[in-house]
Length: 365
Image 1 (cartoon, helix red, strand yellow):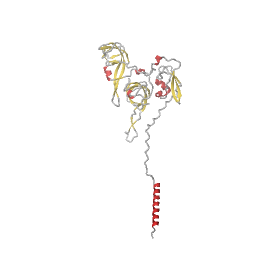
Image 2 (tube, rainbow, N blue to C red):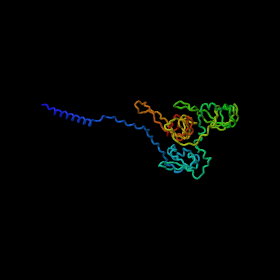
Image 3 (cartoon, one colour):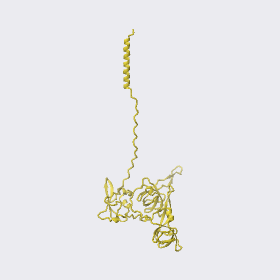
Image 4 (cartoon, rainbow, N blue to C red):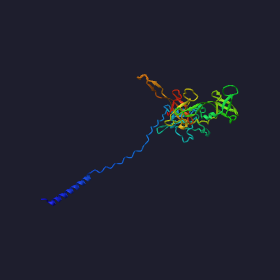
C-alpha cells in the first residue's frame, strides 16, 4: 500500500540533498579565469658605453718638469704619457692661474695622484706673471714653419687676386730683390705687403666628389712700391722662384699657436688628400691635408691615427693558385691638426713608422 506521507518525506529529503550538493558544487567549483594584466614593458635604456682607456704614465715620467724654451704641448705631453693625446685628461686646472691653458718657459709641471688617477699641475713658483705676457700664447716651435704658409682659399678669391705679368727684362724666374709688374691691383697702395702664392690644385673629397677649396703653394712675399693699373711690386722674400701668373693675396689672420691636445669626434674618419710641399710621401714633422674640417667637428689640437690600406696578395697554397687575399690595414703614424678650415684641415705628422701618402685613412687614435 502506498504511503503518501512517506513519499513526501522522501521528496523533501531529495530536495535537501540536491540543494546541499548544489551548494557544495558552487563552493568547490573554480572561479572563472580572469586574465592577469600584462606586465608593463621595461623602459628602454641605452647600452652603457665602454669605459674610456685610462691615460698611462710613462715609466720614465718625472715627478717635476721645468718647461723649456721651444717646448711644444705635444713634446711636453710625450714626457709624461705613453699616449700623449690623453694630455687633456690628466691636466688639472689650477684655480689660481688666470688662464690654465697657458704655460711658459720656467713653469714647473708636477704629477699629483687624486683618487688614484694621475694629474699634472702647473706651479708658477715665486716669479711674477706679467699681464702683457699672459695675453701671449705659448709658442709651438715645431709648427711655426707651417702655420703661416698652410692655406686653402676659394676659387673666386684666387682668380680675382693680383698676379705677376712680367718683369723689367725678359726673365721668367724672379727672386728676392726683383721688381715685377702686377696686374689687377687697382686698390693697392705703396708699401702694401702681400703673400706671393701659386695655385696647387682644387681639393676634392674622394668619397663625395665635393670641391673643398683650392690649396696654394707658398712662394714668398711681395710689397707694392708703385700703384696703378699695372702696379710695380718688389719681391721681398722668397721660398722658391716666382713665376709669371703667381698671385698676390692678403695675409691671413694670425693663426692661434695655442691649443689643447685632444681626441677627434668619435667615429670620425677622414683621408689624406694632399701632401703639403711634397710630391709622393711625407714623414715626421711634415704636413698633410685631410678631407675633414670645422663642419665635421675638427679642431686644432685633435690627434688622428693614420692607417695604410693593406695590399692584395696571391695565396701560393690555394688550390686554384689564383686566390687573391686582402691584407689587413696597418697603422703607420700619428697626425695632429694645427690649422682648420671649413671643409679641410692641415695636420702635422708627429709620429711616423712608414712614409705617409695620399689616400691613407685618418681615424680616432
